Image (tube, rainbow, N blue to C red):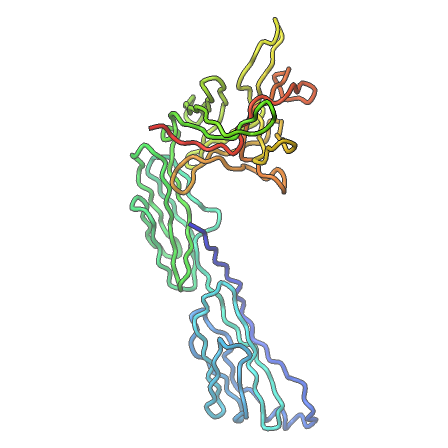
Length: 354
């Protein structure tokens, strides 16, 4: 579900501007277009406001179609419909006398201000969970949820969100929704514990051949918990990658982790150390990030399935949501110890085994 963010830029503004005129008789000019009373600011829902002049004008109109102007003697009735945009809007009311002299009034209408807090997505473990969210608005808002295990209750300018305990044994995803004046905002809720993703998977990825070309292959993967929020990501029952788990968010998988060790000759070892790999890993484009600070995410899509995603933007022209391991003669990924590429798993996808 796409998230719609509503932002109000509403500010109170009333301005009176006198247009250029060839009439040099200012007292008569002022008397003919003197404003006695002006209501020039509209609420987002619109309605009718009035501008009263000292004398009946010859002509009055708005420069934009959203404002209708009706003359009633010395009074101008201004009517605006609901502004369904999050942006405020302004138009000029032009008032003319018989000689064609004119003044303009700035007419302002506030935009829609409602929605769910940005950056307040809910990520939680399988236990029942509650959270209160601030939801100020200038329109009537209908709050709800897409799933029965999420309940939403209005509480003043806040909403109280309750997430029921997850007993399905699987990750689950839903949304809190806010609807007003034809607009919808949504906030993602993900409920998952490490126990929900433990198990066996089939991984499909592009793997590097001796020719340096890529070929789609499948491998076995297991996720095994080693602590409350720690696990091993094991490939082919051979390479074990120590990773961390955040409830509702998934696994964070750092480079610089040793997943294997080979004795190349007596007393001399070669270490297989994880790297973050570019999704474009064609011959001549083989980019991998060695180090210990970068990571790739194994997180949840909108159906609760595990998917690999880029954890941080490492290059403007590349995405890094793939992984692998390089060969080093040292247990740390230092430049002088690099011995070559070990394995890469480009654009990996996981499917859980029944």
